[in-house]
Amino acid sequence: MVDTDKGNLKAKVFFIWGSCCFCCMIYAYIFISETKGLTLEQVDRMLEETSPFTSSKWKPHSTFAADLGLASNSDLKLDVEHKDVSSESV
Image (cartoon, rainbow, N blue to C red; front, side):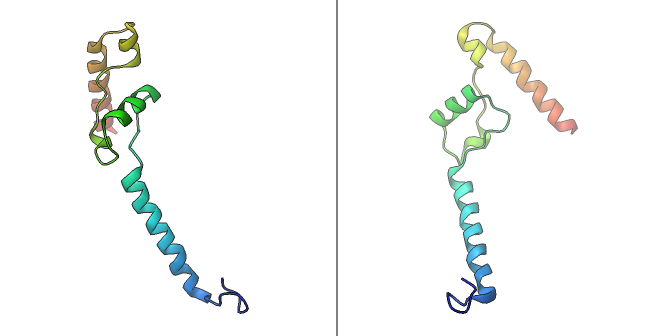
């Protein structure tokens, strides 16, 4: 794209590169969900219930262990509260 016998764009090739990067940022914002701090089972449940725009506000309703009967949902509340407190101190 920058050779004289091909495209001869010279420095204009960076506008193509920049527009591709901009399109990638828009794609990621619209189509990629926020999955930070979630297990695979919680991500699966989140993708069933929300869209990528609202995925950052989604909170898990139960854990995989609670679904299997190995733990109660009250353990989830304690775990979520503990995560909120630890993230504030950082």
